Image (cartoon, rainbow, N blue to C red; front, side):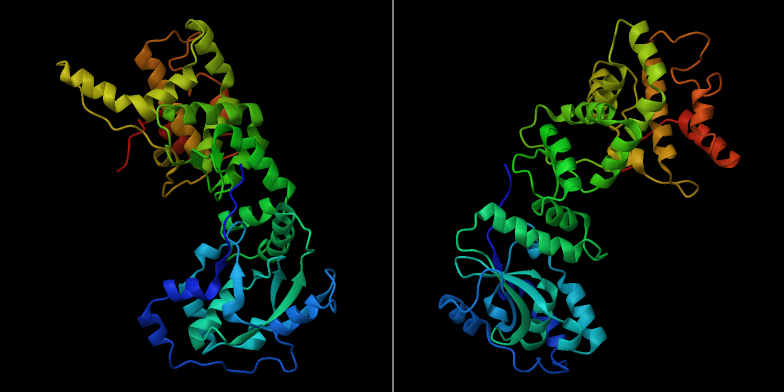
Length: 395
């Protein structure tokens, strides 16, 4: 089920969120040029529309009062306006410039509300300078048909918003996804459909989400590298750790998923051998459950029972994905999975094929050499050391 939200007044948000000391610090600044001349007022356009002077296909530039402008957080970053960036830009420009601001874009909904699809921050900046909800700003006004469905209305607005934000570096991943999703961009619908059956949502678009992810681009990369089946298997293994929790509210790290998927794909032959040689176990899934959920409690229980065992905290996604001063590529994260897997198989005393000394052979096997073959010899040696070293939790 999609999450639809109520449109919010841009000025009311600024009043609630901009601190008095910030406004005081901007009090010496002003509007540095003039509103374009001869623009009709927004309310006059609405009156003319009511008597049939404009059709649903028309578009007209008008002067709108700031206090009349709303923004829809369903697809826009209404609740995440960066007031700090607004302050920074006002100081840089030494005030508000209509010429620099250009023209906002908005739609009139059948209920008469004016929804800004491009211009949240510019509207906010003008209010921060004037603190006047009646001051006007140029808006390219467009009309929805009276009989339009709500879903279609959101789609049209988000398409326009997406056209503005898709190439803006200031838009974060969540904002870009929401805009692309509600405008039905194929790539956004594809990743939504892939993740939603697993209870993983992006940017609040899945109401029933038990997990979230912001780094969905790395999950998309994992699918291209390792295939949907492997990525889905990795996600099922990890999300199943929280089956006993009604609302775990855990963020899935894309690079964690990507590294685990590359590990399963590249070293799948050895994983299958371990499984088949030891009673058809699911060694990868068991390893995930142990290190990321069960290890600490099992060690504590053993210590309570009298065994002189050191307590180790469970491994986290961040422990897998932390970079190093020397190397930060995905191969580093994969090598940590190799370390965990080899350690787990050894702890379980499972049968290992042939003359290999570890489940994933680092010396005897060709797979690890092939895995690092494209890297500089120095990095190959470094990664081999990582694959041999224990993975520990960093607080």
